[in-house]
Image (cartoon, rainbow, N blue to C red; front, side, top):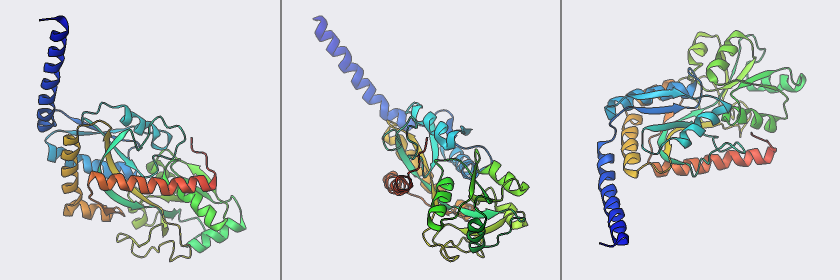
Length: 321
C-alpha cells in the first residue's frame, strides 16, 4: 500500500476509534473525583451554597465533588483557572453575576465556558453594625450627605455586584460613603460584627445568624420583594429608593469544549438537586430562591445580567481591572 494511502487509512481509523470512544466516555462519566472551583474565600455566601451543591452532586454522581476555593481579585483568579482547565467534566466552576466586568481578566465569560445551569438568585442586603447610627435607608442617606465620607461601607472587590451595588447607591442618591473592600463576604461579615466597618453591602448567608442574634442590623433588601427569612426588612423601593435592585445569580459552568453529553448529565443532576424540597428550603433560609434551569436558560441569564451591569459600568465610567 502506498505511504499516503496508509497514512490516510491510519488517521481515518483513529478518527473512527475516537468517535466511538467519546460517547462511551460520556456514558461512563464520572469515573473519578470532580473539582468544583469556588472563586471566593471559604465562609462566604457563594462558598456556603457551593458546598451544599457539591455534597448533593457527590451523592448524585457517585464520585466525590471536591470544593477548591481559588479566591483573588474579586473572583477573577478562580474564574481564570476554570477557563484554563481541561474540558473533560472533571473541573467545574461556580460563578455569580458580574464575571464579565473586568477589562482584561484573562478569560471571556461568553466564549470560554459552557453553561451548566442556574442554582439560585440571592439579593444583596444593606447591613449595619448595631453601633452605627442608622436604622433605615433614609437614615443612611441623610447621614452620608450630612457627613460625606464618614460612613464606611464594606464589600467584596469588583467585579462583585456587592461593589457595583454601592456604586449604584451612590449614583441614585448622590450620597458620599467610603468603600472598603474585602476578599469575600466571610471576612467582611466578621469585620462588620467587630465594628471595623460601619455598613456592608452583603449577601444573607454569611450574616443571617448574626442578624437573628442582633449582632448585625438589617437595613434594606436590594430586591423587588422582601425575603421570607427576614420578612420585617423592607425592600429598597419600600424604603424610598426604587431602582436599587442588586440580585446575584449563582450558577455552574464548565470549560468550553466539554462534551455536550457531560454538560447535559451535570445539568440533569443539578436541576433535580436545585428543585428538591430541602435545597429550596435551604436557599430560602439563606435569603435567596432556588432557580433550576436548562443550560440554554442559564446562557440567556448570563447575557442579560452581564449586559445590565456592563451598562452601569460604562455609564459611571468605572474602570474594573
